[in-house]
Image 1 (spheres, rainbow, N blue to C red):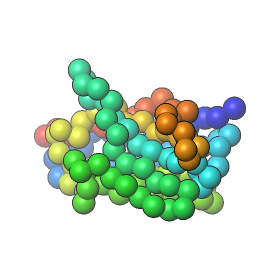
Image 2 (tube, rainbow, N blue to C red):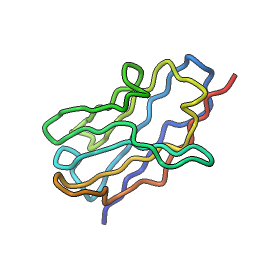
Image 3 (cartoon, helix red, strand yellow):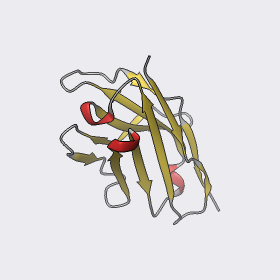
Image 4 (cartoon, rainbow, N blue to C red):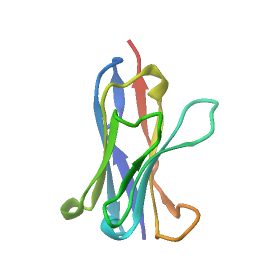
Length: 118
C-alpha cells in the first residue's frame, strides 16, 4: 500500500521560508517521479516542481529561484524548500508520485496547508 504523508506547512510572513517534507511508504522515491503540486482556494491544482529518478529537477516558472525540490533516498523523503514566500503562494501543497512514462500521477498525499500572510 502506497502512502505519501506531507508535513511542514504553516503560517509564515511574506519573505519567510518553509520546508515541506513528503515521507513515502510503499514506493521508493528514487525510482519514481516525485512531484509537488498546490491548490489555492477557488483555483485549479497547479504543478510546482518535479524530481526525476535520475535526479533532474524541474520547477514551475512561478517558483523558480525561490523553491527547490530535493530527495533524501535514505529517508525515502522528498523535500520542497520554499524561500522568499509571497501571499500568492498560499495554498494546500500536495506530494505525488508516478512511474516514469505514465501520463498522470498515481499516488497523492493528503496535503499540507501553507499560508503566507502578515
